[in-house]
Length: 128
Image 1: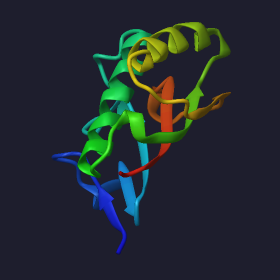
Image 2 (image 1 turned 60 degrees about the horizontal axis):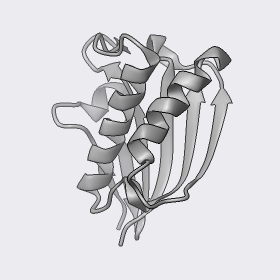
Image 3 (image 1 turned 90 degrees about the vertical axis):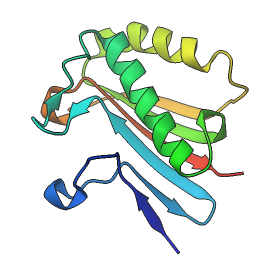
């Protein structure tokens, strides 16, 4: 049976969004530094590094709820609104993943992202 994961206090019926889904042992998770009340970028996401950390913390929380962690990611799509932010994003991303033994397939694309956010993550993990 499939199940959906939502952040505490979120109302998926309001916007039709879920933070993650579990299908068998596959976990699909997404993260944005989004204030659910204002539907704008979280005020704590001052820099791209801040926003990247917030996204990775959210992603980790969704994965934990599904019984796995960042180490279980097999593929991650990283979306940025500006190519100029790539270095700051990757520096922060690499700092967090440095201690994790994973070689997840990853791509970075420059795209439009909703609500004033500059970073969005979309990951696939395999639960142990």
